[in-house]
Image 1 (cartoon, helix red, strand yellow):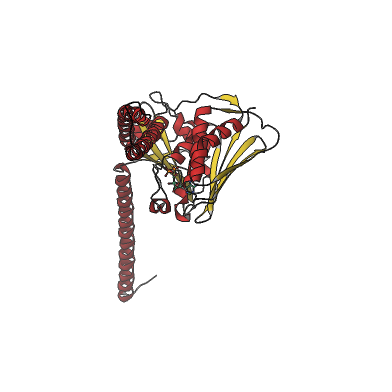
Image 2 (cartoon, rainbow, N blue to C red; image 1 turned 135 degrees about the vertical axis):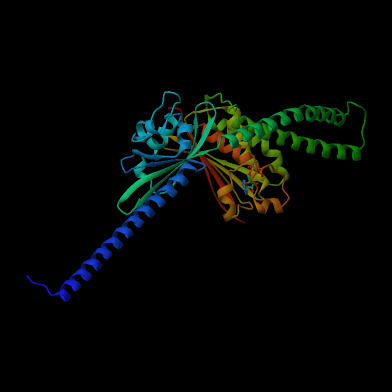
Length: 385
Ligand code: ADP
């Protein structure tokens, strides 16, 4: 084929443009590649410098990516961890069962929302494990964050020890004051006049309140240190309820409140309980009902059998618990804004202790309350099998 020189020139020009276009495409591709590498490096740098341990699992729960802290927490190198199934993860240096259990208890794939749990690994490592699922385009997986809370735990332990030691130290002088006041009030040190008696009675009552607070604090520290030991025995729950009601009759009479008790005619099956601890739990609930119910109000206790459990219920016609505070009711030191306004005495430790006692008996505790109308607290514990 014969091309004229003009045609040749045009072809050359076309080829030159095509070459240029190719070079541009190549350059763009190279730039995109560099950008992707750059992004990847940035992401890796974030992961590497993350202040928590980070694990990424694929859709089959195999470990795809770990941050350096994971190697320290799990005491093994990245190469040993990568590709392993999280349900089978183990180490020769540290028992990883608590970590596996977190996944086993809530099968990783079934968790819809974020799930968080605290675990204890080895001698002194406490980790808060957060699991969340992600979906990015076609890719699905799980993100696991291991947050080291060992220091917080240590500080908490030191605080508990401090409270425990202080409470023990305070108990001795308070007991001495109690017995001295009792002797004076009983006339062992000579006759006292009415005015002196009145003042001493008030001092005696204040001292009693301090002793009660110290005892509450000691119970809480025992719970937290795992020293709140239980001595369960088979017994009738009715007996503990009757004893507690009879102990509170004086307080109830002062407020002109009659405590009514309703129970099935025939005896309930026995329960396995620690008599002293269950007494504390029921007493806390009854004391609250009396304390937060105005004079001439009503307090009613019900006992009933429900399947394999006994259900204890205590209803009062008192001040109730504000709706927006109800979720905090079993927390340590919580006191409702309405009862603080009323200037009632209290430590906010009673319900925390009660919940611990009921749960240690494999029971459940819950309540219903409406501000200004009253509250009903319930607990259930299983009968002896
Ligand atoms: P305390 O009675 O010493 O303050 P508790 O732990 O026993 O501590 O109770 C915590 C808080 O829960 C109380 O301060 C009060 O606000 C609320 N509460 C508990 N029981 C009742 C009740 N029966 N009626 C109204 N409020 C209650």
